[in-house]
Image 1: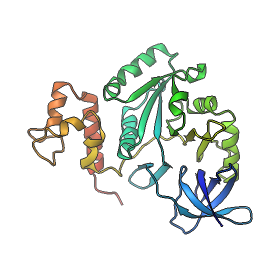
Image 2: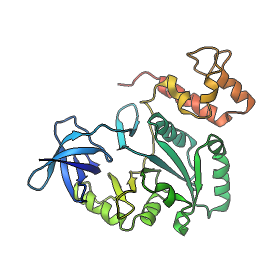
Image 3: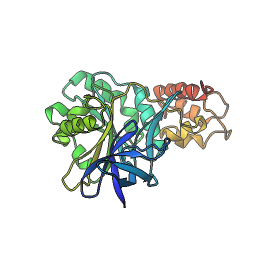
Image 4: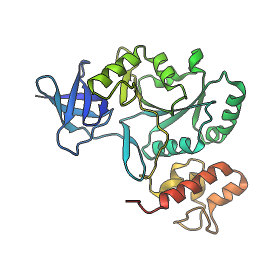
Length: 295
């Protein structure tokens, strides 16, 4: 008999499905192309000690990155993406912008958290660099996770499904361990079950923050690059909140905002409504996404 379940971990061709009563079972998707991701709601059939995924329910959204060669899906059915950056190591504005664009494209609310408040000078510098993002309306939280300063993060996560994203060194493990006691133990057990080695973040893993299982936190492996090749280059400006209001003022409907006369975006850059650093990022991303596929 088919049962419903939630995918709480996945690695290669295996995944772990949690039943409504909290039991977890290793399952295999039926068919070679079936790809399930953490956060998927599925229908599955139990066999002796494992199970088979029969159907993936329609997704509300899918957060993923795509470079020239492959697509990497993080999670599905998210309420928000928590993007962690730190005062040190210095964060990449390009990486931050890419993650924000990917979230905008899937209508997922992004929340930026700046960690290591205790490093006074680097923190002040990082905060100044985030000023354009605050002006755009993004939520920017400040904390010092090692010192137990989590800002109002616990409140913001309540009753939501949140993917935690951030390169190594930003305090992701510290935050997850503060919010989810025994998170490391749970992740290690899942990794062992899926034969994915001893590394605690080889696979994306779902953690429940509360006993009632209403607040889900998804931990994803750290990454260096965040490709956005799935974004239509002509839609790029629409996914950048500081650009979007000015697109309507362009003389040409197919304006690239790079060299055309009568461009509302270029006028906004001149007027100081769009920061020079953001406009530069837009130009770099536009060039990258305009490249023919490198098959």
